[in-house]
Length: 182
Image (cartoon, rainbow, N blue to C red):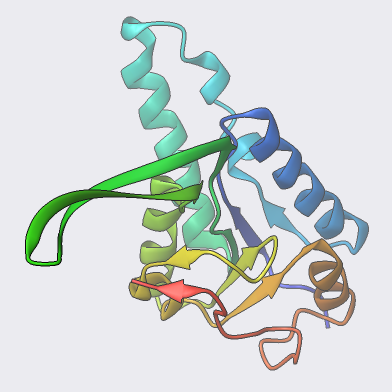
């Protein structure tokens, strides 16, 4: 039995993100998995040269990716959006010893790309399986994402094993989310 046509959803807006997507693509290619790769097959982001071209190119990119989503049978969604070591600071009001104070929490930024979130929602609405990819079992995800995926693959080595073994949705490689949820 061959591998399903797989949509590779994930961010590719900085060198670290591109490197991760390339590594995932290499795993898929090495095992002969037919894929739709938005960063390559959408093929229009590099055409965004100014306001006069942006609308046409954005629509072209959207239409290509929509066709890919419709045609694919499975999605591998990279649900991390590392921002080159930056930190996210969230300010909020807390009460300590009866006094109102302003507190700041900092986390290493690792949030899903909004386009990837949209793609996961589309696939879920079509009742097609989504497998989440996360480099390591940590972080924080929204419960709507953790419940939209069939399971998670943590790390490139586990991804390689899962693909080599046939990408079964019943594989013990697929795990539940191990980080925190919001």
